[in-house]
Image (cartoon, rainbow, N blue to C red; front, side, top):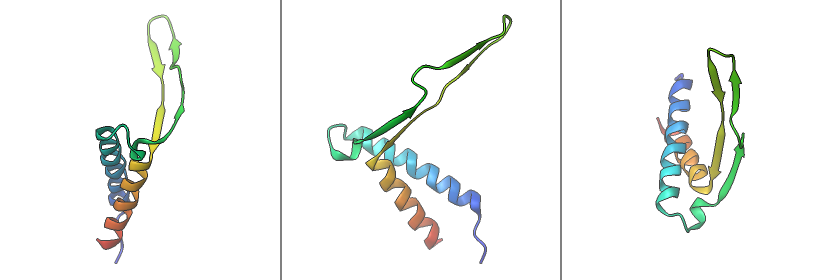
Length: 78
């Protein structure tokens, strides 16, 4: 049986979101412990007529890692 890669991607993305939400519900627990990385200040490209802002910041927490693990288990059971 062939499994769909998009389903895996969407499940992992949902696991990250749900894990981040659970981590934000319990801000003082170990679930919210993690690391942030990315651009601290957004990059701005000003072309006179058009200004484009680029920025990316990712926060990986214990809760989001648990969410990814649960999503992978659900994907394998599908």
